[in-house]
Length: 100
Image 1: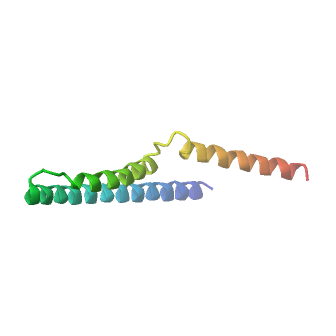
Image 2: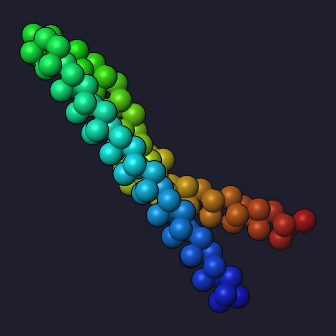
Image 3: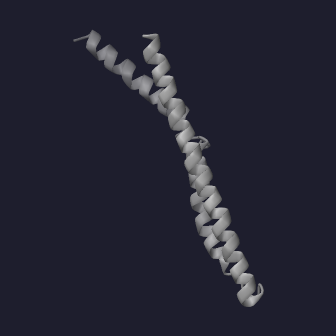
């Protein structure tokens, strides 16, 4: 039983590390590409119209959503909510089996 718990903990930790790697890869891509677009924007028209901000804003929304998911920042449907609901449904199922 203890080996199973340790294995589950390991798998959850590994999944968490993978999620963090994906987020930081996404953030790195964002910084490099938006930085490159900003440099290109400056080189082409010298900040007369900062069009790169449109891409930064759009992609920034995606980065924010990814961060909310990765770091469990959603106050409504975060990991704690998931765990509470899972526990609630498991208890309901156990109660139903008792009465059958």
